[in-house]
Length: 560
Image: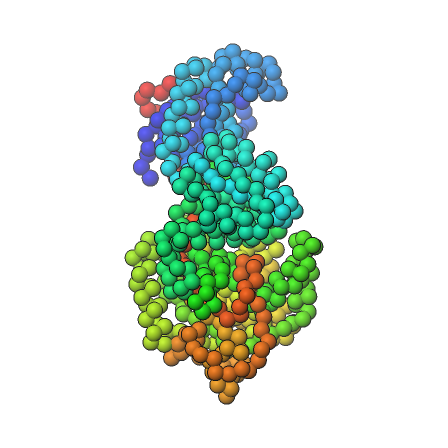
């Protein structure tokens, strides 16, 4: 990378040691001078050499002039001497990466001998921050005070609000009073023109309210009918931030790598942007719900149904319901039809994980506008001529559609480890009828490194849309009904066909991101990159500074 010119370079004081501080358009760096280095055994660095630190300008939270009292520390004698020689100071707050993908806001204070120089550093750094147009300045915040352990308000006031104030972000806060309060307010009342983003403080349920409110408002403003399964939805212009404070924080964990409120707040402050696919579920010409994580029929649908009856147990209800659902070991007949995705998005078993800077999702972003219309025409053509769709009939313990890995602390890999956040597809997982022991082995593999799809009774497909019909609505004759029948060619979508038999009335329910759908027969389409989050995806390793730290210290004229 070409060396960037230094905007400022000065010799300042930090923790009673003289340091050389340099600033370019992208990096702030400091290192000990030779004299201070000899007196010190070493300083732990963020990046660069053993005695230097570098911070990306885009990850600076704020800079402020520091009062004299703030520069004092435990060594009063050294502090007094430093204050006499360097009486002026400024403090830079920046992102510091910790273990397990967590971020923290750290401060570094530099003391200056000259007031003009101190003010110049504050001014120039603030000028560089003002050029970061992706950063939000005004946010609409919804807090769910009842979710999880009922700590939402406290988490926001104690951990998030102080960071927003430090970064000079204004926030209008609404504490929700009932279910769907945030959704209804976004749909009709909120003046969205004055905000740069919408933030929810709560769990996945609270995020679902924000998702439905914001997407519905966007479609209403653009006269798009959500009840039409083939409608081309308009992407939302505002980003969504998630401050985890619920019973389940799957979406936050899968997009950031941790369920930590401070980390999420810092992603919002630095203005990260992560596009995300959204699945739309319909029953005929009636819109049901949107999904960004998991649509589950059978095991997960039954589990949610049981857990809703035990809400008084709090988060423990999921464990109890999981055991009960597993022991009941039900399976359900049905027919699944699906439209496979193109080859360029890979397959669910390619072990290509979706991480920050994912090439699969970036290819989809660059070609999304060009291919959106072509893809819609191709899908419509496939439906009209009954080609390209696969059809599978049988008995299933569970049918899942994972639009992300669905990773969580209990299942670090998730239901579909190689699912992508923004490639315009969902991974359709079919678990056929099997013994209780075999199904248990399948579930256990979600918690270890073994391939959970490596079973004869498990099938997985990467699809752009799919339909499901329970047996009482299957458009086939009785002699065609078979537990193991598989058709992959010459079969059209089954959603639009008429019912011709009444084989069985038994069916489960669909779990849609933690909500129960009222119909078992559904049609699902993936809306590519319909929303954006204040996130960047899970980082594979420590972020690198894309400039050699040594180039910061190369001699240049006009240094202070």
